[in-house]
Length: 504
Image 1 (cartoon, rainbow, N blue to C red):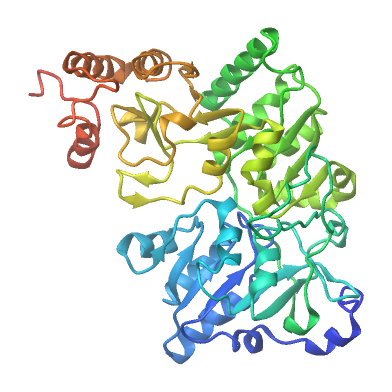
Image 2: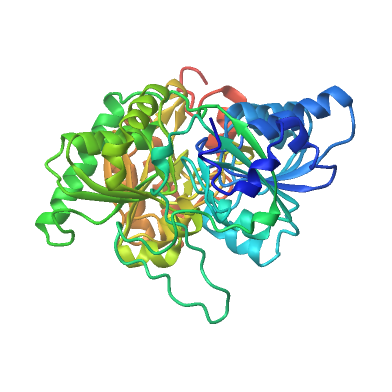
C-alpha cells in the first residue's frame, strides 16, 4: 500500500509505529511539526506523544514549532496533556489558547514570514526533531509534502532527526504542485528570482539527507478541516464596497483590469468577501497568498481566477473532498510554496500584492488590533497579516462594524492592542462603507473612518470624542484619560454603549 510511495529502498526498513517514533522525543526538546492552517500537519506522532505523557505521568515538556495553526485535536491533546512549554508562531485552538492566556504556555506570536530566518540563524536554539507529513519520499530520500509546505523545508534542513508521517490518505496527485526554495545565506544573498505568480524557482520536493530520517510512520488521516460561517448580508456588503473601490481604481488608471495579485487572510469574513468577488465583472485574477480557502476555489469555479500561489490549501470538509477528488483539474493553476516565500516582503512588494486581512478592531486613526480581545486575551495571532500589510501595494482590512450583538464597536477611539500601525493600513471596510486612508493626515483619517465605517449607534459618540480631542490639540488628538474607556465600559458593563441620561 505504501511501498510505491517510498521510492528509496533503504528507507523502507525504517517503518515505525507512532508510539515508537514518539520515543525519540524527550523532556526539554524542541520539536518542529509540519502544518499550516490545519493543512498538511503531522498528526499521529504528536498525539502519541500526548498519550504517552498522560499514560506514564513522566515529566515531558517540549517547545513546539509549527508553520501556523495545526489540527485542532493535535494542539488540544498536547495542551491537555501539559506537554507544551513554549509554542510558536501561531495557533487557533481553544484549549491551547486558554493555556496561553493563563500563562501555562509561553507563546511567541511571530510574523510567519520571519520564522525560517530566525531558525536558520540559530536565534531560537536547536531543533531536535522534525515531524513532517509527506505523500511520498523520492528515490533520493527527499520529501514530497502534502497540502501545505509551511516551515517544513527549514525544519528538514536544521533538525537533528526527522520523522516522516507518510499519509496515504492524501492524494498522490499532490506531487508536482510544490515549489520549494530557501533563500541563500546572508550577507551576500541573491534576490529571490520570482517575478510572476505562476513562476517556478525551486524543486517539487523538500531536499533531505536520507540519513537524518530515523523513522517513517504510515498514516491514513484526513486533514482536520472545519466549517466556517457562510457569507451573510454584512459580508456581502463588504464585498460590494470592495468591488466598487476596485472598479473606481481601474477607471482612474491606478489598477489594471485584472488587478494585481490578491492575498486573502484566514477566517470567515475574509473568505466570504473573497467569494463575493465571483459575482463581480473582474476577470483573469491572480492570487499570491499564504492560504487558499473556499473563496479562492469559488473564483476558480467561476472562471475568475487564472492562477494561485499559496503555502497551503485550507478548505471546509465538503469542499476539501470535492477539490481533492478533482485535484488534477486544479493543479495546473496552483503552486504551493514555503511560507518564507509566500510571505516574503521582497516578493510581495515586487508583485504589487493587494492584501486583504481581518481586524478585531480599528481605531479612528487606522491602527488595527487583530489579535487581543480587550488588549490582553490572545485569540489566535498575527499570522501572516503583518508580512503582507507592511509590504503590499494596497493593504485592506475588513471588520464588521459591531460585535457581540451590537454591544461592541469595532471602530474605537484607541485600539487596546496594536498589531498594524496606521502606516500599514490603506483601506478599511465594514458593512457600513469603505474608507480610503491613503494620503490622509490623522485628523482626515478619523473623519473618514467615523463617517464611512462606524456603526450609526456609535458614530455620534466617536465624533464627540474626536471633537473633544481636537480641542485639546496635537497631530493625532487623543484624550488619554478616556481613550480606552470604551473597553473598560465593556469589561464592567458588558457593552460599549454609553448609558442614556434616563439610565444615569
